[in-house]
Amino acid sequence: MARYVGPVCRLCRREGMKLYLKGDRCYTEKCAIDRRAYAPGQHGQGRKKVSEYGIQLREKQKTRRIYGVLERQFSNYFDKAERQPGITGENLLRTLERRLDNVVYRLGFASSRSEARQLVTHNHFSLNGHKANIPSMLVEVGDVISLKQKSVKSAKFQDIKENITHKSPPTWLELDGEQLTGKVVALPTREQIDVPVDEHLIVELYSR
Image 1 (cartoon, rainbow, N blue to C red):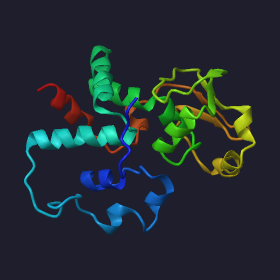
Image 2 (image 1 turned 120 degrees about the vertical axis):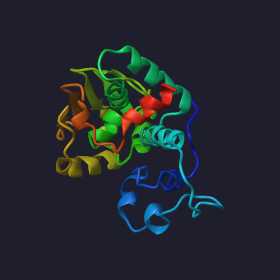
Image 3 (image 1 turned 180 degrees about the horizontal axis):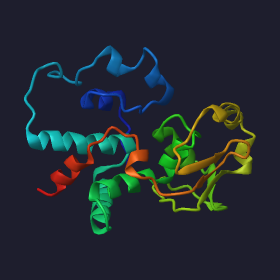
Image 4 (image 1 turned 60 degrees about the vertical axis):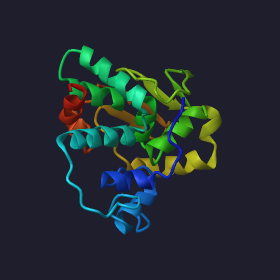
């Protein structure tokens, strides 16, 4: 599947906030949003009144970029969320959180979702003992995500193993830092999803 391969710091600047797309770099003085806190491009520093539609669109784009999802797939997620019982916006965020690449990131195996996506596609993880190299796979309650034995011995994951005890995954996930495994103990609630998103704006956008 296609994905965005351009400079991700431009995405943060376009949304006017840190989206933490480059992992640890986002916490240093090299972060682009700290150095140039205005939109990229020739007219990035100009003042412009944003319409209601523009506000809704920016919220949708921001959410897509946080989770690394392209337009058609995001639209499919929304259609699925709309058909589920409950609040559509919360259903959408819950589905995005259940993506395998996001779960790998939330467990602390990667410093960003893009790195987690790469680790998954490179076949470092298994799901319930089976091959799992598709970042968009959705986890269910009771699923176990584990690092493959051939990957455990690598320098990268040995370093992760030494530092992962300092990380706290969300309460809907359970982490075994010694075995480098994670388990889905519940589906995430809205209170447990800490992304800076106003999902009702996305619902209003798709309801036009």
